[in-house]
Length: 342
Image (cartoon, rainbow, N blue to C red; front, side):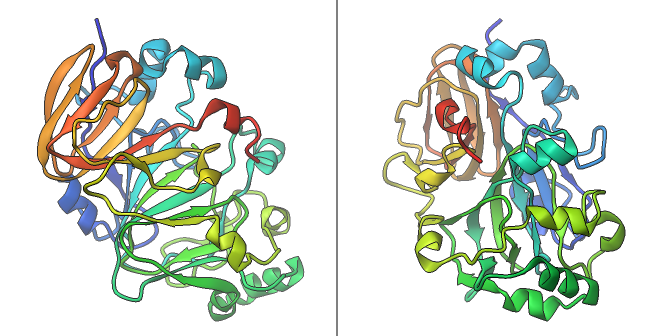
């Protein structure tokens, strides 16, 4: 039997920061006040958990298990040869009602050496909505030293940590790539579709006012002295920032990439404007942001789709097109580029 695209149920759950109501409205989920994330088509668990975070298909089966049972139909041979049964991507909705703390994520080499994982956590944010003058913190303004950052962490000096970052204004349509090791923060009220490597690795530099014990859970069980070795202390210059940020819009026009080319070794995201343009077969995760329409596949027929639907699209469905509705298609990295992505 040919696999067809599947409209996924909501996968919102509790977290340590406030938010979630806009996710509930968009995805017909439970909303807030402490469910600020939804993991979409996730085959990755929360750090240290056995099942939390995993997405289920409408019948209750974990998507992870369905893919493991028939990987070539879900992922295609080229993907399977390059990556095995890993979908190589984690897609989230983030809806913070409070500023996200200054934190960072290890890269692949650190994760392999110290956590026995194949992936680090380079991530990217697609800004769906944001208050006027909203900002994100991205990388250090000046070269920092490990002992200085460690002192800020121990002193719980949130003001100094924030002051150390480049603060960048963002608006809907902006996409920001955050390389692993980069210290970062997000203002309250910024609604984000996040793509990342398929891990849940976060090291906190501050946690005052958040429902988390940073001394216990803020360092991935490694201790701050070790986990801080995975932080990039070099400044993020304006020229480099320009290679990480791209502005677009979510409707009209042709199919187009939301990220700069630096993201292609980790993940890809395209605006699908709903004009019926052909999209080649491949595993993908589609979030519809506007309109009602039809998704038609070459191998498995057509289904009605609409605003707020999240779908997982298997390779087996074949080439496809979307008419009427528009949204964002998230896809795994290009295999050739993934090999050299740090």
